[in-house]
Image (tube, rainbow, N blue to C red; front, side, top):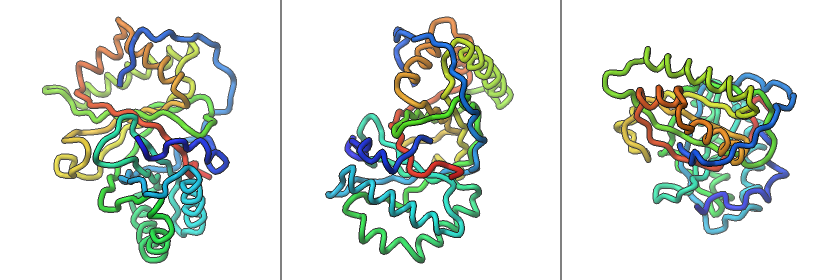
Length: 273
């Protein structure tokens, strides 16, 4: 994966915002007290395919994100937040994705209209040699938070997993509610054991037809987006999830067919700031 390699060098500009082997050793630790994160301030998120330019470097990427933030700060309908994700396994479709979080679809439309009229040409002229994003490959989702973290995040690189899911034949949204309740009980129990404090998840409902969108994934009904503050916490959580006898996982596996992809996540603008 080329895009975003070594972006830890741009830390001054970036502030803290499936299935691993079950034999990973889980480090047990008592939860540390911390402030409760604020509720999400966005309702839709849009992912756009991007490619690395010939002059890509951590320093040039940092200049690009700083310039974007300066423009977004002056926008009458700014994005609520933004981040980039880089796939852990290379593919031929894109080097990474730029994600904008918006308070509404109307804000998204207004923000893009403002960008195209007043900023797109100059920004492209200055930064296309660093990174080129493709507005014709944008994918908008309605978001619902499924699991909130209980501890604040810090750092400049996080973990993201996206599972593109559909109900198995004969399964319904009522079955999905059972699976969701079972998972909520499971994660609550994990947190009593010192795991999952910084884990959060969302359900993304596509605001387009996945069957005809020509995206990187075929047809699906929804996306389960899982986020961790670091790789160590992800490994511990996933080891517990995959452990033999986990009823919550068995219920989920019985209801959904999912295809998962893992990414590194780099914040650009923290939502609500």
